[in-house]
Amino acid sequence: MEVLLGGVVAAVVAALVALWTHRREARQRDELLNRELEYQTRSALRETYGALLVKQRKSREASLRLALDGGSTHSQAFDREAVAAHDEFTDVYHQLNLDSSRSMWLEARGLRAALDDMLRLAQVGDAKGCEDAADLARDARQNLERSFRERLGYDAHQVRRPLGKYDKVEPPPSGQS
Image 1 (cartoon, rainbow, N blue to C red):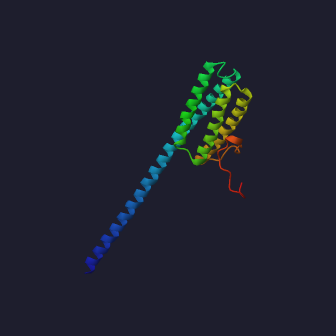
Image 2: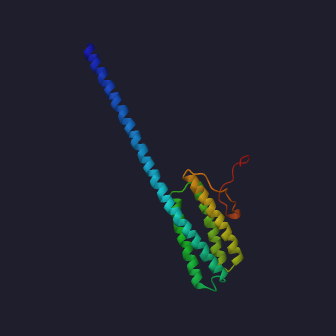
Image 3: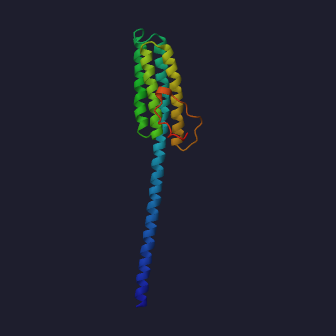
């Protein structure tokens, strides 16, 4: 009887050890899979963010050229260029938002709003308004960079800049800063 009981206990212990080992290995696989997925997401996000930097700069520059040339009625070629550059920015903006955090999404919306206004101001030939919007678009891009660094787990290099009417970030609850 003792031998039989000893065999049952050994079998139960072996089964528990096997179950524990299996669960530990499954957790390790899940952790590795999650790390790999996060690495791929971060890589894709970096690539998309890099493309967004280029497209927003080209959109800003094209809108400024159009505004300084007097707007759409004076230069249809600059108008087409500015609209195309803005459309390219918008495409990458939507791509970035697929993997962005909420704070990145809000900052990207502020950048897009500034670039949208830049294009409108450029089309009517408002060079001063377009230049002012360009300054805010640069600030919006820096805010986006800040939230991008935070998304990746890094410290921000700069303080967040207010964007006035382009700000999409919710203010902190009263009593907090």
